[in-house]
Image (cartoon, rainbow, N blue to C red; front, side, top):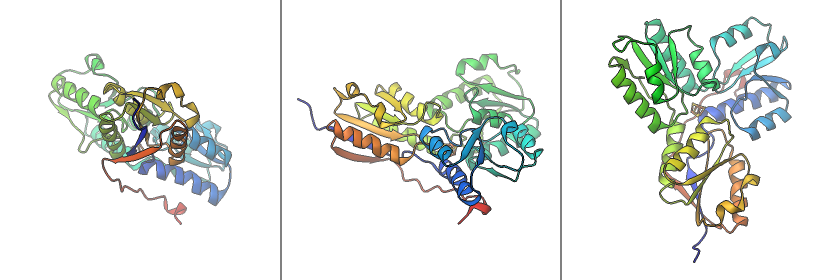
Length: 313
Ligand code: SF4
């Protein structure tokens, strides 16, 4: 006999402080200066957010060459390489706002210090991800990308190298990264670890919540876009723990078939997915008989990042 159909809602879920700040920068710049506002790369990796800002006059570009003189430019939350900053500075732009998450910026600062001190740097992250391009692009050479544990053997560095340090992308799998760093330490005994964890609090907290949810849910719906690194990690984590999981942008993607044998469905959202999409998913699930909703709180988040002075109030 089928039991009560229940939704378990993860808390924390959705927007982190860095995403909140980045979206607010574009939003307030549009309000204050009017359209168009140019944004280098999707300000955050979420289709709903990007479409909404685009409709209001934001123009998302990849190449600084596509920004006309005298325009206002905003860098996305993922950060930009120094070459992009230099190219933008050489143009006659009206204003530049930096929506790089302060936690990504923290990694940039640490990386530049290590590079100045002569360290070879290994960056754990995903190739072609804008955050990785931005972070690796803070320095000129002597930095190596590591995507998986098996890549360690291909690093062109002597095992007894004295000055070697590791930094990571902020949105990786906490467990997988820990295991890669342990193997890296065995291979390079002098490896210097980051002063504080590079994986950010929001990534850690959303993964911790999914771990708990996996013990009580039959299925997990992750709301987030396909290009959102932290959202993909949530789906992966649930599946590694034996819980079928789907990553969706919108409630309309929910397939009734997924729910046929499900009594308890978990719902979470990646750090760039707005709450309005969570509401849409809950409403859709209600139409399939999931009328009982419980929130599973694993930690309270209170992080807030300040806006640039010109955009406050
Ligand atoms: S996921 Fe983490 S690093 Fe990325 S914007 Fe949010 S707080 Fe910043």
